[in-house]
Length: 128
Image: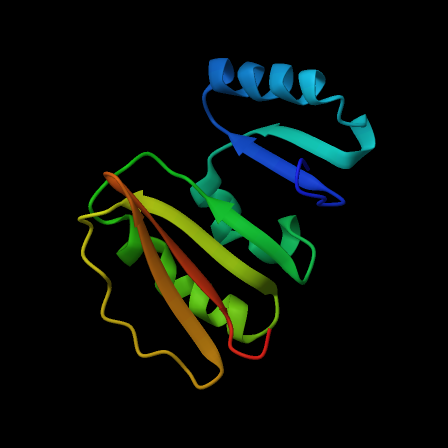
């Protein structure tokens, strides 16, 4: 929202973290119609993406750090970005997490950027 998004759905399973997100949104002065706070497991959201996220959305996942995070969700994200269901998929994960063995279809781009002990992997369409 602070970068101009029209709508953001925040999904967090920890009630204390969700309260912090709510307080930050209030401090930002975000209009209530511009966001949705949801206490849920983000992994289940990813599994039911078609019912939960409008087509063409950007999905940012920042799950608890674990070695298998990229392998767990990037293969599924590839199909969703390729189909246009997602405009982009951004995953925050440990910098030393192994990259999954993916064969990207033509037209997709996968970039990884380190930042200290963490990293972001960005999956987009090449033509985007």
